Length: 341
Image 1 (spheres, rainbow, N blue to C red):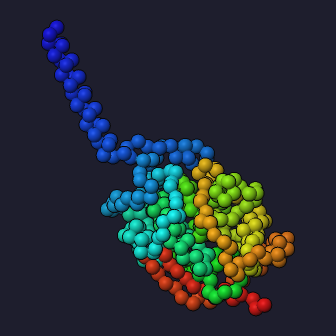
Image 2 (tube, helix red, strand yellow):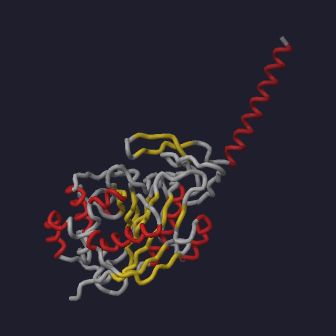
Image 3 (cartoon, rainbow, N blue to C red):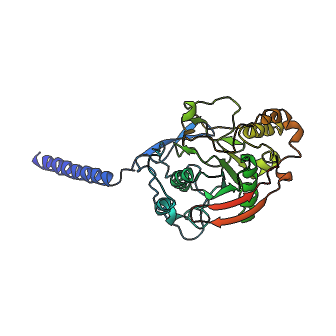
């Protein structure tokens, strides 16, 4: 009997020691427990990744020698809900220090331990928004890295002070990016929108995808059912099928609605993440000079079916003034050949 008592005492001591070791290791690695990540394609949850990682900490991904296997459908390093704030004054040097060591010239990245599922070009229409660009780069690069994308960032800068043409800059970004790499997915993003959840994957699907579903400016609700602006993703085939954006929407408004109509006219529908995953924070600002609301764009929306075959990628005309490759992005300055008034 006494022998059994000592055996029980011994096993109790060993169990307690193992439990203490477990707790100690778990404190060192707070990312031990997996999280339930929402699959926006089939509206289900899967256990992947970790939730307790420091927001926007870009951890070096493990490297693998030899033949690479495809990256998983659900990237294992996602953090879920993120903290975003714009009070900090950020410079390009700050961003370079934050993520530059992970990138290659031109704002390029690809995972070293697996083969990315898609080659993604991020296209940003731009003019005189350098402070917003710094915030975008600071937050988006770590997200895109954790999403295990083979990606490049292209900032398409409109030269001069003529009326802004966001849609034409998107078409130019698509065309110029394809000259540099064989991209098969294009994410078109406004510079003032930052995702609040990295489970909102910047990838293309079998339908054109509207990513910026719930923006704080609109109380995290869709302003209207057919909105397709802000951040959207189309595969190479989908974008060619609709002939890209219209090139003739000068000034503010209408070009995204025109693209939605093009998608419908080509027999496609759009997909979206749910409103919990597709949340965004907007950098508040006044409307840019020379980007005033254009009343003519309302009439143009009634003519999409007439113009889709002749106004778009196949009618694109522009002049490249400069291509500058920084470690954080490829900055392409263009003359969009604005009409003379």
